[in-house]
Length: 103
Length: 269
Image 1: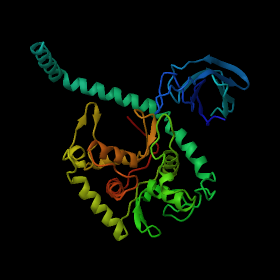
Image 2: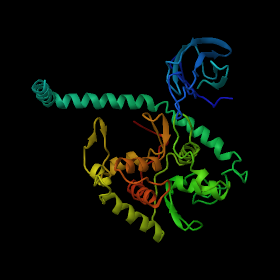
Image 3: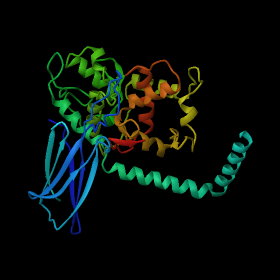
């Protein structure tokens, strides 16, 4: 189980701003550890954002994204109390999911 | 080649002198803008979350959590404890800062050997540090409270005096004191502004935000690491975690920032 991520969802006018801070090493496959061995590729592949169960963002990202990445999305037509669900899947098959209510 | 580059330098210097003010201002503005942007989503908060879990988890040979650790406000009280540290602890008969006290509890309550307790004192990309996570969680429990180091005990006053002396004392083969870099206004190393510990506003700004997420380290660092790193930069022999040297300086600096509102985890370059 991956470490928790942090989601903040706030309403600004009629636009919801969703900010996600993910906890992930995002290894590029280029770095060597203290013993000189290459640290294998380990990165988030898919990111998905749902509002009330409906997918609004579906994205593929790569190892080019930095460690502990931050994403921010703007969604129109949302209202306070809407359920925001964020999940990711990495190249090792590990997943993480968290949900919060829009305020 | 040599003359050419020297001429280029002179030209560049003249240009900088002519536009220096405007240039410095926009650069600073840009740096501030960047800091504000990343501060909104401080990755240090992930350390705080992990620290809370570690704090409540039963660990070590004695299979105990840290929830009974006494940070000076009584066993188990973490709220506001960091604001009052460093302080004197009778059970250890010495002044301790938060990180030192944390290690003390890991040894006394959880039964870790002192050597094992500080094994991951500083994390890196290959190994996360439990102490950095725990320290972030504990310090964050004093958020929005003013730093309040009281120097009530004789040993606390002694630590403060030692810290003050060390701050101004030139040490080691570089003949550097802390004050060489941190007692004048407007000093910097490359683009990095050096804070002035004798300026109340600047010391407040620094001390309120430790432990801090250090962007260049990709990890949260504690004040113990900052002091260790300063020691290394001054070419001191290896500064030990929780040594009297570090705690005395920490006492001096924290007391200097009394009244500053704590905002942890901070964000540093």
